[in-house]
Length: 493
Picture 1: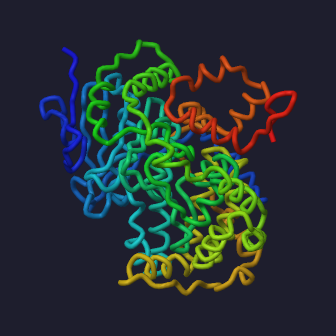
Picture 2: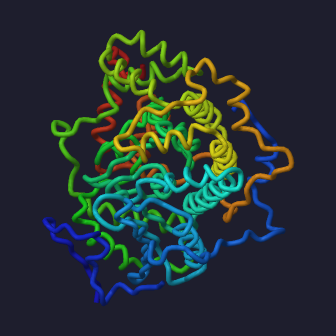
């Protein structure tokens, strides 16, 4: 008998996952280039990577694992801390994912957060800041945590089975790393996405070097430097999420996915396509554009591309000062950036510009080195204490205090591999330069350009995105902003 699990629209359980039938859920207990990174991004099989194991003192039950037929569920279980990620959680998840890789019974992996407030609000940076104050040993321990976290993110990005991240609630920092690289990312009406790292003297890590430059236009640069939030369906329009569902449908969706049977020799693309078609069954409509217009669209999007396309932070600030069409927005953005760590801003912009050429493996290897350098920099401890630990929050005292004091040499140091060190060994050999599953999200602006210029046929466009919610809205926004009508027809502008 096929099972369906429903969740009443009006209910507010601790999590949609907890509402699944107990009988059917079985607990399981820079311009900088360095050849050293490229040489090891294709991991040698001569030495097998060590799978992390739990350590004495790790928190019990901070991650819950369950099985619903062919679906394997991972639930981050620190709701009082908005499911913030720590080493204990990563050491539990990594071995389980590696185990499921080999299991013929495990068809799909779904990751969610306990409670209704967050998938994951980020890494437990308060604990890391206190650890850094202990000196070099504490700073190294913090850097080791980021390396462990990035290994998990890379494994998700290259996982050989369908992986679904449920971005229900706050999804920031470390929560973004657990979701944005998966082939399927579900946003709900409760999703709150942001990359707030420059606020605390850090940089948009967890693969931000890869996914942010690959968003449309300069959206990634804008999100990285300002920490702007995207709420609900805006995560879909921006390309962060691939699907948008009301949170009340998640229980039904999980039950339906558990019914799927994959052919024995089905390839990963075939399995992903089946999951995508199944998820389409749960489309219930997006909020109307009158109710929720596309946030990063229209004249604002044009201003974002115009102001954030420059090669230095100083040039971006000058462009914002000159902005006239979106003057109020530009002034607010200037005030926002002025509060950020100058070092973080310069490192972040460099990261986004050079990250366009990095592979997904090189991205995490390089980010591990950048993170280790930030653990030795005073801005991280100061930023975390000022913004997250002080009551009320205060403005941080950055060192250096101004953009002009941050030299190119200081920025270069974040992107160089220390002498004698090798890039971090990853737990998967998977690698690529562009997301192989990008077509499960809304079409990119480049896809729409190809349609307008007839580099892509209407048939091919419909084959990839026909019937998908949000396509019409995005195509109309891009067409209104980027095309003009002429006697020869519609022309890309």
